[in-house]
Image (cartoon, rainbow, N blue to C red; front, top):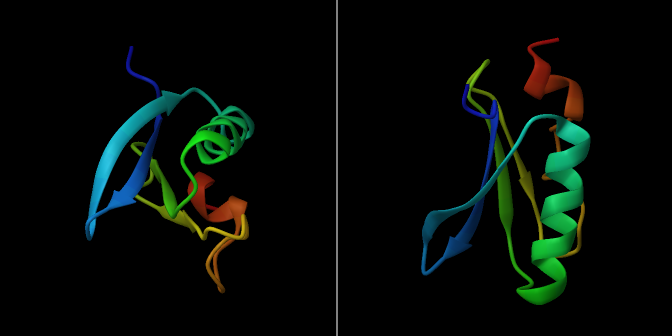
Length: 73
């Protein structure tokens, strides 16, 4: 089974796939790990709900997004 969350990094105006995760907590941890090596804007995308959260370079979600939105709540 494929992991339900995909992690992308914004590069040259396009999101490029970087990793997958089985939970939101694992996805956040992976974004932190990736951002430590390559700072920038990341997106966590839910294959289950189609929702996404954009993580800005300062490590904060884009205004108006919340972790619950990934779960369809």
